Amino acid sequence: MDHEDLKARLRRIDTSQKSIQDTSGWCRFHRKEYKTVVKIWYQEFSAANVQRKMALLWLCNDIVQNGRKEGQEFTGEFFQYLPNAIVQLTKGGDAKIHNAVSRLLSVWKERLLFGNSGVPTLLKKTGFKMSIGSSSSSQPDFAADPRARSSPSVAARQKA
Picture 1 (cartoon, helix red, strand yellow):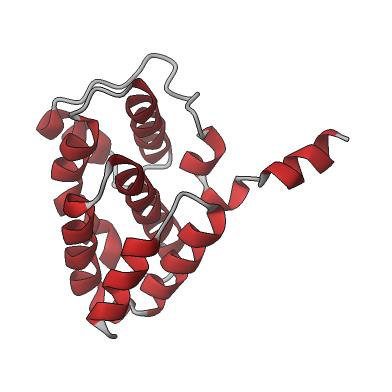
Picture 2 (cartoon, one colour; picture 1 turned 135 degrees about the vertical axis):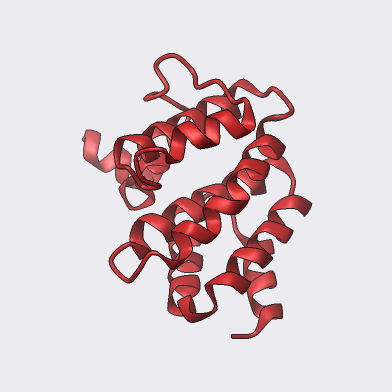
């Protein structure tokens, strides 16, 4: 795995379904180097603006959820960095970001992605308070499962 290639991919990531899935697949392909992938992910996360931080958190979600079939390596490694990542992302007080993070945590809790104590531990370590009704956010389907997010043209066709 080329570390510079990973950094470039993480710097180009956006909130689109394709970007998240493509990058997630690439990272999971290189799962033998999961520690390096997650370490570089966190370095890029720390340097990112709020929008890219949210995209990187969704990338983490996609890697962990879709990587469960292949092994638990990423789950434990990401979990070590998530408290600091959540604090960094939510420190600005933006309501949309708070709701999106709440929704993601709600999904993780419901699916036991980090075990029974995972989300409560994250909440305790971060002091984050989940939104009431956190099942609705600016991107609820994508937060739960990026594959479920429709593009505007698909949504328009579905309504027709």
